[in-house]
Amino acid sequence: MTPIELDACSTDELWTLYEAIVGILQGRLEGEMRQLDERLVALRGRFHAASEAKRSPRFRNPNDPSQTWSGRGKRPRWVTDLLETGVELEELRTQQSQSG
Image (spheres, helix red, strand yellow):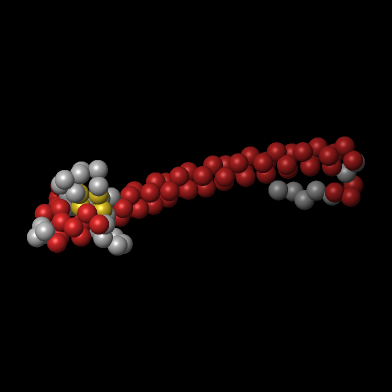
């Protein structure tokens, strides 16, 4: 690339050069933003899948299947009540968590 004598350029020539540079920069920045957005979408997808796996229910109430527990945090009342009646925690495990 040959150096340009900017001081010797007219205002119109400088303005044309400015517009060309802005156009090139805008195109490059948009391309980089697209790549970053694609990477962000991929990372979000991976993070979402990993967090869903952590939060998926591992235990289910046999008396009310809508009640589930991931096994994290404080035990729900229904788990405590069933354990007090002699039910083993493993008996409450969901099919999905048994195979995984």
